[in-house]
Length: 84
Image (cartoon, rainbow, N blue to C red; front, side, top):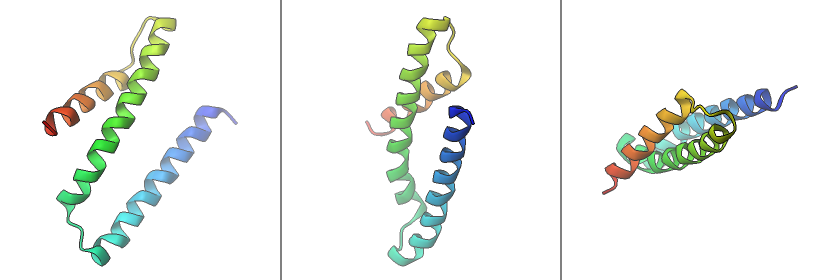
C-alpha cells in the first residue's frame, strides 16, 4: 500500500467524519452555516498554505508547481483577505 493511498483514505475518512459531526452537532448547539464556515475557512487556509509550502519544496526538486499548489495559493490569499 502506498503512502499516497493511505493519505487519501485518511483525508476522505476525516472529511466524512467532520461533515457528519457538523450535521449532528449543528442542531444541538444551534450553529448557523455562516458561523461554521467562519471557523472552517481559516483552517482550510492553513492547510492550503501547508500544501503550498510542500509543493514549493517539491518544485525546487522537479521545477514545476502543480495545479493544487496554485489553487492552494489562491485560497490562502482569499482567506487572508477575508479576515482583513
